[in-house]
Image (cartoon, rainbow, N blue to C red; front, top):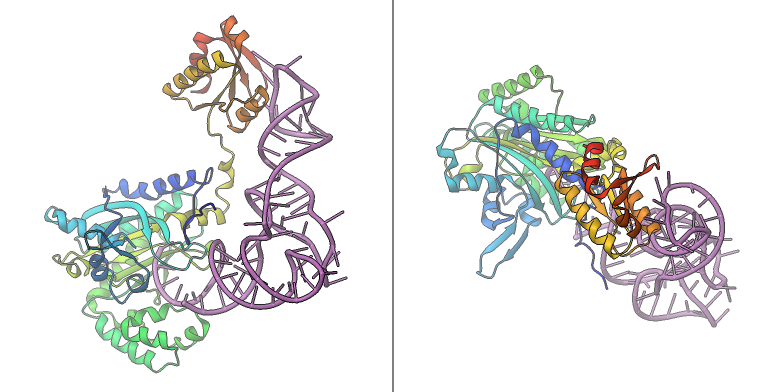
Length: 420
RNA sequence: GUGGGUGUAGCUCAGCUGGCAGAGCGCCAGGUUGUGGUCCUGGAUGUCGUGGGUUCAAGUCCCAUCACUCACCCCA
């Protein structure tokens, strides 16, 4: 009996796994250049942080959390999202007592107990950015712009931006009531009827055609915004337009976490299957207060690393790098004495900054040469007893098959000259 | 939680109305006793997901179960 990865999880394997690192780095590069500082929080938190922050009425909290009791009797939850933990850390350490906004970025695993499907897993990787403690449409626009730049830097052309506003605590209650009145009159299943009472905005997001058909005349947030929300949203839109960022107004765009207010947005890609969001976020002016802090209007986003890679694969952006070699030089040693010598040469090559590997496992020349070929190395070093006697190592250019003897003492310098 | 599809070699899969478990790729070895990528030859690897049932006979039919997968729900 062998083991397999737990249900709903998967492994990234070479060579594709290299992309995980590269994508993560590319997605956060723009925020790192925009004054955002790195924050690392624990993988797990007190369960209550998510219950109060993300909201009891959300599916994430009500049925998707990995919650357990630790040996000290505390209720612990593996983080299902990154924003509440970041806000918790800001409040705990008083980061908001300095100049605002506090700009932070993070990268890490998230956990949600869901039924897996393409692009949706129980363990997934996100990068995120948050700007805490400032109410300024330019901050919303900045974050959207930075996420857009990350996707663009990866060569993605099929990422679309959907934009909406959810109003604030002044105007949302009236809208919510109007929407509930409308929804209650519809013919819906029981689960959806319950949702009307708990979180009516989410009903707008329902994908089922029989539901969508009934939603045609539903009241929209845009028509119920207060003056402040309206002008705020207009400013975000005009800043985006002025920056050349294309977006689609989607008055039905709703997010699944309770803390969102005003600006909400989602980056979607059509090559992913049903889980089309590669990133999403928005403003969460009330979160700090929900978890016991002062008023700290904030905005942020999270981008899915795994989904971004799926999007890149859908656009055919990854194939060309697949064959890229792992190392530049590969050692083939024949016999014990040569093996020891090769071990030293390879170590020295690495110290000078070259990527080098050698044959392990006692293979014959043929097998070792095969290993050299597969390593993607430009040069193979062949060393046997008679080479050691002659004081030279055979350096073979694997692209041309030319082979020359180079004195042992000079081989590192020789390769350095050829390769760097 | 609900529904559909699929489980056969390391990988991708073929296997008809039940009748000796296969191919391609990969892996290993040899051709070439010190030379890869091409070519030729040979080789290894399977409780046919698991358990039960029908049958002279089950990879194939039936039931159950597990896993994977896609979709709903939800979201990155």
